[in-house]
Amino acid sequence: DAGVIQSPRHEVTEMGQEVTLRCKPISGHNSLFWYRQTMMRGLELLIYFNNNVPIDDSGMPEDRFSAKMPNASFSTLKIQPSEPRDSAVYFCASSPAQTGGNQPQHFGDGTRLSIL
Amino acid sequence: KNEVEQSPQNLTAQEGEFITINCSYSVGISALHWLQQHPGGGIVSLFMLSSGKKKHGRLIATINIQEKHSSLHITASHPRDSAVYICAVRSGYKIIFGKGTRLHILP
Image (tube, rainbow over all chains, first blue to last red; front, top):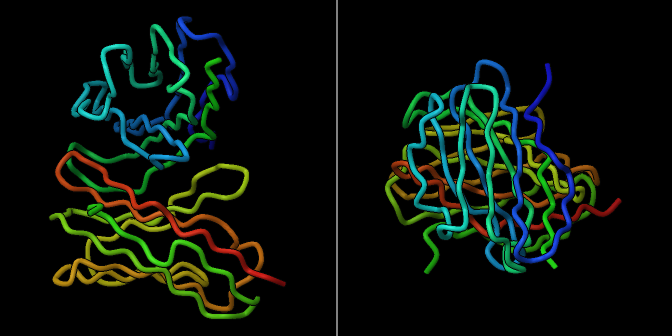
């Protein structure tokens, strides 16, 4: 079975540019999570979707960040405009959980983002 | 004070030793996750617990809901167990992470 697929694996861009990170969850999983990991703050939940609907986006740092899930097999996390402090590894994870439920999450390999 | 505290922050042990990593939390939770992050950066979910104890191979995870505490044990540790182990709790819609425990097993 294919796991969670994220693209790109690495992204280096200049500040002010738009960045789009992509995620394909495991087929049949109906919960999808976007996380950010930095040395200073560790892992943080940014946003969580259930059945393609955003359930909790309180972790999204500011209006420059937006996430969409147009269908069950695809999600994007967009940063516009990007800033150097957005540099981090961004992980996507999916699980078969229902809203508020608890199932193990399957993580993608992450996107390492560097904003110059 | 962090809502999820892990100890120790760093642990170095000899191959074969019994390892314990602790996680304490201060919020009400519906579940607790143990994650493993290897030096290459990939994250693997080891356990999801809401009560009691789970075992998978040489790994055992326990949780005491009353005491708001969980432990991850590794028996017969091996250098390939070297990784960062992260505790995460589910509290409502929130997922709150500990800072991680960096484990290094020497051959």
